[in-house]
Image 1 (cartoon, helix red, strand yellow):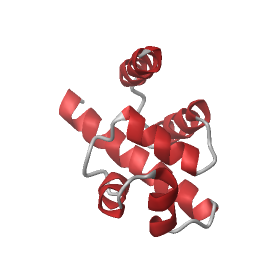
Image 2 (cartoon, rainbow, N blue to C red):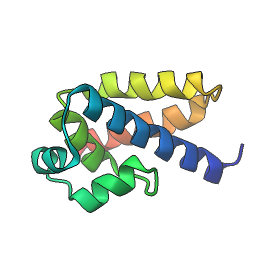
Image 3 (cartoon, rainbow, N blue to C red):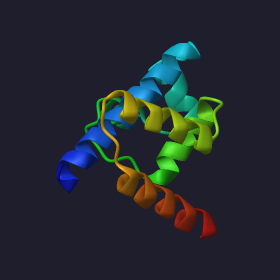
Length: 104
C-alpha cells in the first residue's frame, strides 16, 4: 500500500476511534468541541477522515474524552489490525512525531 493510501486509512481509523469513544462516553459533537477547544466543523472533518489531524488537536480531543494518548494509540492499532492492515512503519512515524512534539 502506498503512503497516500496509508494516510487515508490512518485518518479514517483515527476518526472512527474518536467517534466510537465519543459514543461510548455519551458525549455529542457540540460537547466534545467545547471540551476540547476544537471547532465542530473541524471535529466533523476529523471524524470523517477528511483531514490528517495534527498531534496537538488529537491530544486535545483524546484528553477531552478522558483518555490518555498511549491508550488511544492502542485502540487505533487494534482497529488497524482488525482491518487486516498492519503498518508498523506508520505507527513508528507517528510515535516519533509524538515524541518530537512532546520535547518542544
